[in-house]
Image (cartoon, rainbow, N blue to C red; front, top):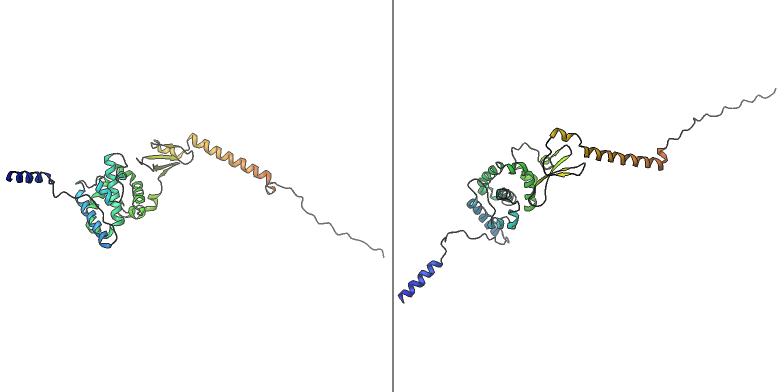
Length: 256
């Protein structure tokens, strides 16, 4: 009987988790009260402090997706691991600024480290305005407020100018609306699209042959329309009229 008890005891010991202090999976309380909302915020901030990389970023994870109220797939939508980390870190900063601002003293330190890491990444430095806009749409935040605060480089840029698509000549810089959110260029005159940036900036200001053809077609259509209007509108026809000369009064001489 003693051996049997030892066997049961050893079996029970072997079935125990090897890491009893491991964090439990993220679970959100229903925010039906201020206490539940505060508890969710506390758990998220603790999670952010615990999981931030020493370099200053958050990698996509199932728990992070739970705290951001997003499907895990949206955190992996960029395709490559390093870009997914940039995307996830940007989403964390947007969520904290939009929904956890009252607790900023608890996450501001890690937010500063994450912000510094983000602006050291070439991909983010080039496309951060578009990434911030997409993240704000996803998390129901104001892109102007984000670009003026946590994502502001030096505070001197005009936010309205940042939100306008960058343009050089007739080429407008845009991004795909779906993964992998690649950058492309659209010509607003010829409706042409291309992946690479036009290599000769001085030539962009001058119209290309395709642009000249499009402009000539536009001018020809405008001329034809004007000619048709001239045929049907009398006011467009010049009418030559002789000047009016009043008749001279007749002078009658009566005999004496």
